[in-house]
Image (cartoon, rainbow, N blue to C red; front, side, top):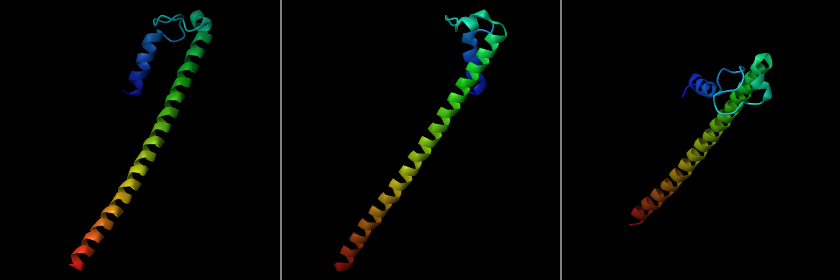
Length: 97
């Protein structure tokens, strides 16, 4: 889902931002219900807050996934060393025959 779609879905439930009570069943507070410049400002600040929160969460998720990738790469390297060690033991056993 694109950022535009997310914003559109959120905005749809709120009605027109800053224009009084929304369509989502809740008014959003007395300032938003009153509408006008203060309502628009509060709506814009809320949108910005949630957009920033979403960006923070996405950044944390990217870091988490990169850490997982690094962990799995190290695990692959460790397992490859184990495979090589066992292959060496097999070669040694064949050589001793």
